[in-house]
Image 1 (tube, rainbow, N blue to C red):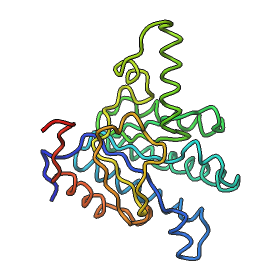
Image 2 (cartoon, helix red, strand yellow):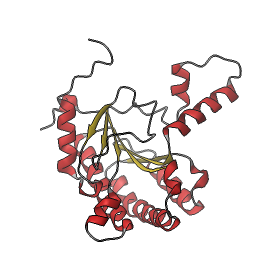
Image 3 (cartoon, rainbow, N blue to C red):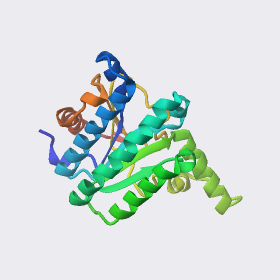
Image 4 (cartoon, rainbow, N blue to C red):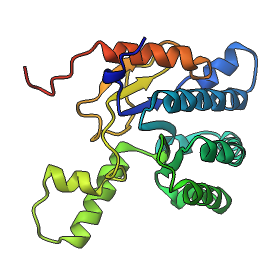
Amino acid sequence: MTQENKLPKHVTIIMDGNGRWAKQRGKERIDGHKEGVESVRACCELAVELGIQYLSVFAFSEENWGRPQDEIEGLWKIMLKAITAETPTFMKNNVRFRVIGNFSRLSKSLVKEIDDCMALTAGNTGTSLVVMLSYSGKWDIVQALNKFMSKHPGEQITEETVGSYLSTADIPDPDLLIRTSGEQRISNYMLWQTAYTEYYFTDVLWPDFRKTQFRQALDAYSKRERRYGKV
C-alpha cells in the first residue's frame, strides 16, 4: 500500500496510447479517446479517495493540432460531453476543475463549457483536476516571459519571476509525472515545472490505466528518496 506520508501533492499524467489501444482492438482511434475518459475518471476518483491535492493530465498538446481534423473535432465532442456529464460529480466530490493552455484556437462552445464548469467548481476545496489543453512547455515559458517583459520592461529576469508568470504559477510543481504506453520522453510538457519531478514510465496503454495501475505508480514513488541535488 502507498505510504500516506509519502503521497505526492501533485501528480501529472501524460496520457498516451489511446490510438494504439483502439488499433489493437480493430476500432477507430476516436474509440480509444472515449475509453481514455474512463481512465481519467478512475484516476480522479482515486486522487479524491487518497487526498491528493492536484491531478493534472496532458490532454492535447499544441503539436496535436497537426492531427487529422476529424479526429480533433471528435476529441472536442468527447470533451464537451465529458465536462457536462462530470460536473455534478465534481460538485459532489468537492473537486475543482481547471483547464490550462492556449484557448485562442479552441471553439467558442468548448471554451464556454470549460468556463462554466471552472466557475461552478471554483469554490471547491478538495482535489484539483487540471486539464492541460492546447498546451506546450515552450509556449508556457514564452508567454511567461512576454507577460513579465510587458509589465517590467528592462528589469532582470530571475527563476522566481519566470515561475510566477507561468500558467501554473498558483499550482505546486509536480512531484510525480506518469507517462503511459511505454514512451520515455516528456514531449514538450511542463518543461520548467518538472525540473525535479520524479518520472514513472509504464507500458500500460492509457485506456487500460485505472486505479490499480495508478496505485502501483504511487507505491513506486513512495519508495523513492528525493534529494533535489543535495546529499
